[in-house]
Amino acid sequence: MSPRDSARDPARSAGGDAVSGERFVLPEPLAKANPNTPDAPVFAEPWQAQAFALAVALHERGLFTWSEWAQALSREVSRPDAAPDGSDYYRHWLAALETLIAQKGVAGSELVDGIAASWQRAAHATPHGQPISLENDPERG
Image (cartoon, rainbow, N blue to C red; front, side, top):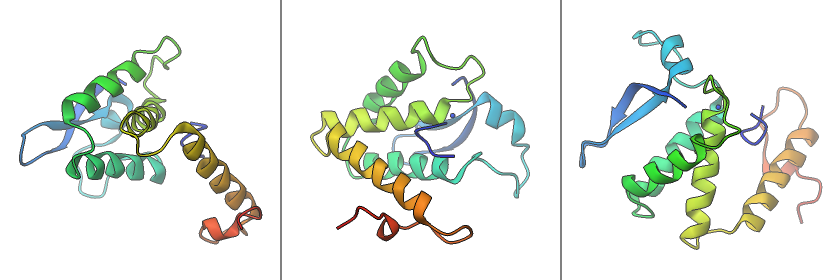
């Protein structure tokens, strides 16, 4: 399942920023499913972990502050179409990232949408069980 097809209520801290002391928060459905065991999954899908890591990396590179991030994510999870159970939390996470990178002039929605479409085509063209790679996009030139 892709992030665009598919992840609100903060419930559990999942680490922090050693410099600022700010905390990351898992949505309630994931926090409930994640007992404090070393091998318990933190994310329901690999793309969620990647989106989480991307937000952390972009913050560490100074693209946005945690306050800017919190405001962008808050706007997304407060949308009227947000799932009441928080199952779309990481879809909102991704939308907040896309908004911030557009606002900061890193990449506009046209570029982001084009890359997402390329990944979709690559996924459909990749044989089952093989890693998905952009090189598998039949329209890639």
